[in-house]
Image (tube, rainbow, N blue to C red; front, side, top):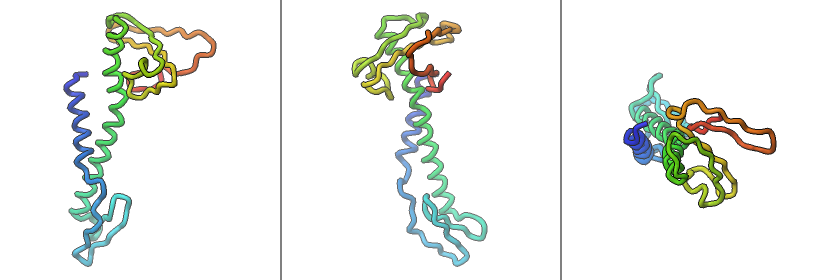
Length: 157
């Protein structure tokens, strides 16, 4: 993935998120007697006949943009973590992209590159770019090994 495109997407999400009104306006009063008001968690929704008013449509569009920006940030965290971590791990281990490597990360010094790791859990990390190395077979021996194998989206394989 192109770094520039990814950073633009992240910045767009943060801008959308920060530009949103955190509290919906609830001080607007219906001007017409034919307008009904429904109170919801996103504020008062005004209906004229069976159609929403322009003010309600504007409020709902703001709420949708806020939700989309929040989802963008949430979805981007795992990929951003690995996007930054893979080159750092290659550099720290003095390896090339054709090498398949495993690393034990323990304590602050071991896990500081990770966005979601904690310092009390030892991590055994292995990374490879399958487009360069080809298929990879991992043989895990029976015994007291606990954990998961995840892809770059932190989804179990």
